[in-house]
Amino acid sequence: MVGYIIRRLFMGLIVIIVVTILVFLLIRLLPGDPLLVYLTQQQYRDTLYDPAQLAQLQQRFGLDKPLPVQYISWIGGMFRGDFGESITYQQPVSKLISQRMPVTLYLSIIGAIFATVVGIGFGIICALRRGTWLDTVLTFLANIGITVPSFWAAILLIYLFGLKLHWVPIGGYTSPFEDFLLSTRRIVLPVFCMALFGLAANTRLTRSCMLEVIAQDYIRTAWAKGLKERVIVLRHTIKNGLIPIVANIGFLVAGLFGGSVIIETLFNINGVGRLLTTALLGQDYLIVQASTLLFVGLITFTNIAVDISYGWLDPRIRYE
Amino acid sequence: MAGSSNSGAPFSDAVAMDVTVKKYSEFKRTVSVFFGRPLPIVGLVIISIFIIITIFGPWIAPYDPLEMDVMNSLAHPSSQHLLGTDEIGRDTLSRLIYGARTSLFIGIMVISVSVAIGVFLGLVAANSSGVPHHIIMRITDGLMAFPSILLALLVAGLLGGGLQNIIIALTVGMIAPVIRITCGMALSVKENDYVIAARTIGASKMRIMLSEILPNCFAPILVMMTMGIGSVILAEAGLSFLGVGITPPTPVWGRMVNDGYKFLLTNPEQSFAPGLAVMLVVFGFNMMGDGLRDALDPRLRGVV
Image 1 (tube, chains in turn brown, cyan):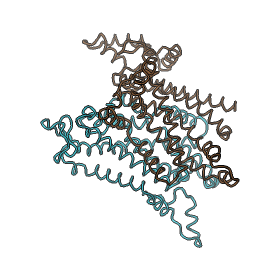
Image 2: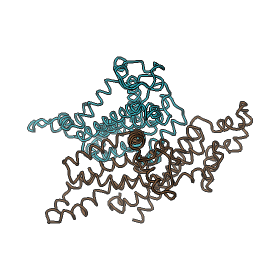
Image 3: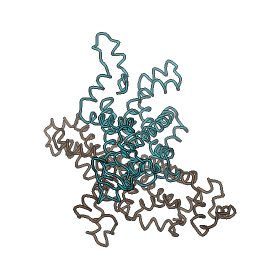
Image 4: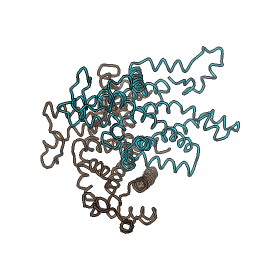
């Protein structure tokens, strides 16, 4: 097990290095020069930019050095918590992100718990009651759930519960520490929309994995030796059927962060997802770079944790 | 569906040669499994209607999708405008019909390009050991850590809008899973006896890759392509909803949902209709993909 954990950590480290290189190259190599934007947006707004000034700025930000040197100094700055200064907000990027991160994390964690618990529950019900109307309805809803665009689901729900029934306020965010009830009323719709895909995917996955396990010989043996249904379902079926769900948690987290980009924008929630979208549209590249790296880094850490717990749940994996 | 008479069952030819065994057609079995259940048929019907609409769009659409009629803006659904008109009086139904063309075109282009590149890289990774394998697979791992919508959003945002850039952006977002699935499939196919046999008779690496391994990865690739078109259409709608997409005034569904959102209280159909269209089409592709997977090779559940 220790050898397995070390191998996984090493693989994770490589993925993180690859990810930082990808983010770095994505921002540096694609068209759209942040300095030109800086020059045209700042004090030089009225005048045309002057190449000498551009060169001076390039030197100041270290952009005249070769790419590997730039990469190293970017990584070095990151370890010191220095992500540069935002052009539009005139504030350090690290400050902008750390203010908004709790919001996105709060929504994503609630969404992840919701999608996992309800999705697994639905999947188990479907598998145990296979072929009944309940299975048919839930499976159909799950098929809709993996299909429906999250922003469209959000608009339908806003229309129904916000504009017509007036059950929940539309948009905005309140911290749960300030006013728990209002906060909960406000996050119900966005969390549901962010979690919808994961919930539906989990239902489908749990159902098919459970059905696979139910068909195994050891389940028939358990029935044959006269175990109670409760024991067979809880100890033998669910425990083995849920292993693939654990493997899928990384995708769930990725889906939630990806969803936050759209849902936070739609619901006017001041989180990292919305910060990223506005920064991208406003060409504020340092914010884009840092928040992308944050999302992808968190996803990679989740994947490493998942891999390690997977090896613990399913010992066969360790010996591959 | 596509003539996949020997995919998934490498021994069907051998069985057919033996005259004492009843003639068995893998193709017939696949077709009968596919049409044996309702959902894949529903998917097929939805996709057929969608394709007919994209081909015959100009003849079906009642109006020019770009024609403005400011006097008649934000009209409610009526016999003249079945789904009403938008902010500047363009007929929503006509825009919806033309939007189908954009969606399908992008879906097919992105899937073709990403499958072509992804399958190639996946096969190379599976057939090479050492440095090339590790380079390809580690970059794939890195790309897989990005939520695909975020990756597409970044590339589209940095390249700027426009059809070509959106196709590039969505391709970048789609390619990693294609590489990973192809590589995984190829590695497991490689263990089969017929690959070892081919190697024994001295077939070259290239030949084994193209004529032994690739045909036997056909089923997952076909399933992946079907479902992939749905995911691409969904992702494209997300991008254009955020305003990073095809440049106006070309009608695209995602942007139509966003444009209609402003008038949700008075003209909800402006937002509801294009979103429903996205959902139906993606549903169609997903259900058809599910059906194809179960018909071609049920063992692929959870892989593709």
